[in-house]
Image (cartoon, rainbow over all chains, first blue to last red; front, side, top):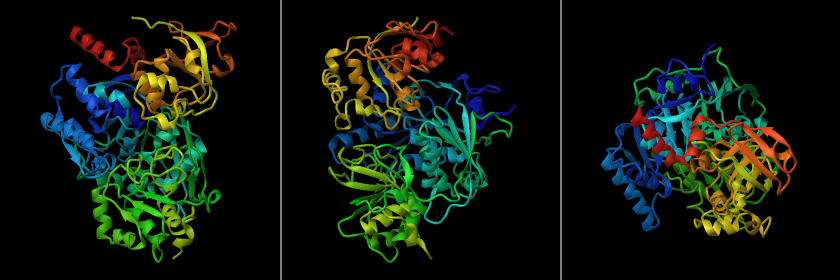
Length: 420
Length: 173
């Protein structure tokens, strides 16, 4: 009987001939990644030294640090935290990537998403590296284990397979596909498992769209997402990848915990209604609701195709007076491409406020709402207080719907704006 | 080293599926760090006398996928401050589970738990036999055994203790 992709990767990094879901292994992560954040990296650095007497990590190339939250710093404490990270990186010879964009995206650009590799981070949105056949897990505080030990104790997860079929209509994006999966399977549909996606919808989807879906795996209860890397994924990663290993794939006769087939051909734009990341509905149920703020960005959405479809919607229109449309490309590389293609100029002309890449608009550090305000957002999350006051509201929609809502000042369907 | 059985009263039953633990102290208070203050805030919106009623060792009961959403640490820091000894739920959200196990906070999955308890029942988790006992009603249920990693972590009181234990083990080996 065959193995799943997750089983194969964990067998490789625990140096075993074969492991099965449920086995507990001591796995050596190929890469250990973190962004600096109070309570995480500063605590890890301190614990390494004070509790374990570790002065330097043994294999610095296995580690990567990102400075993407609190960029730019607005308080001296934030800048001090960043300096602590830079100093630790320099002492340990560990690379610190700063002002390059949101780390989960930049980690792919920099080749940490080597197909077949095992990556750990404390943050679960690292799951998006699964786009390239990389098993990437957010282990929260357990990340300390990967800084202190060469190997981490890890239980091999089961895998649920989801095949997506059908061609998406214009104005419906990968973002809608993901939330539709949550709607169909429920918020615990893949609980504790790997969500493995495939099917003709995925085959025909851009890498950006796949990253968007895989980024959000946690809201199905999954511990991460994986896709068997196709030629498109392998070609993107080939010149970038950091390890010379063979890509791995699920065997056709592997054992899945469950299999689902979901047809997305008739899918309409969706909305995730506050305050639950699982309350997914058709956008049409809330169109007309007044909104004052729009956020287009995050590690889930804010890539070239998101910016482009927003620019297409806004073509010939203006952001409504008084509406705050914040557009933050996911990385510097993405911003450069969007600038070269004239997308940034089109967004500016329509009235968007553009910032350089940062995580800060997603978690309520920038672009903050007061009580009573309402946002349409492509951020990762809509829980209360995520973007400011606990008495503000966040409606998660796709990038095109953020743009359409910015024109009308009300939650709006983007499709009428996209008719050629 | 064996884990002590969890033994106490049912301090609260969270009936909502996919429960977002941030609601325990309220999203407005999620940035508070002081355990004493968090203890006072815990469940205050639902039961203003919660902090006074709870005794050390008391336990929380959850429904399916307990801890879903974007869980923060302060709610359970507050609960531990009050002496809450652990959580028994139908099932847990994996990110929340990992975070709290790393803090050395006992949690256990038990299918059917919700129907098997009322508030203030005297209950117990027997780790050795992986059994839930309701001493008030006499009901028993099997519980999901802990993985080796999780058991070692709870025995060591959390992540740092667990890593020290592994240090010792590796030195002997």
